[in-house]
Image (tube, rainbow, N blue to C red; front, side):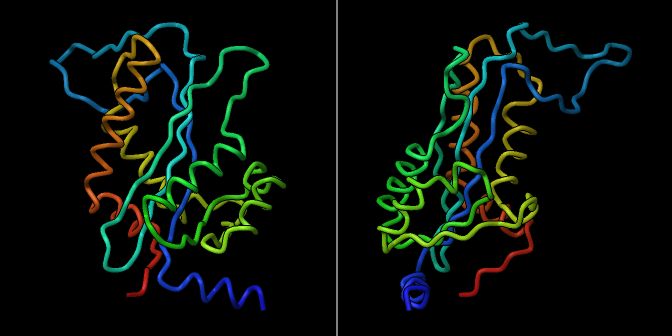
Length: 199
């Protein structure tokens, strides 16, 4: 009975995929042009341990523009500092997404242990606007957010020497904002997975 109620509530809902990625001060390398006989060199700072984590949601609903919602998190350099998002961070991201989308959410994400944390499960069970499904154990090709990371790494982050973590965050935000306002790019990432949303 509860499952039937959840499926009924999911009708007319946003289909939302989530994934997280880490970015370091060392840029990804991409092909580029240079003068013949001169190999291009990108000099980077040696402190590549500084990382930025991003959690992103791609949101789809027939008849609506595809959406991208994301949150950055700077990794703490201290040894006891948290290196990834906590279940509370995910809870807050889902609440913000629900407010922005203005409707129920069917969330699809991977089997990361924090996604199955007791606090997050209790939160999801108490929200009638949230239904959660898990991807198979290793299926990045089924998650359109992976396409967002690929666009970001190939475009705005490739071959750039980041001077500070703030420079890295600024570049990530610029790339994600560009993708965010291009619903066709977000929709294209869904098309790459082969998944179809019925209208």
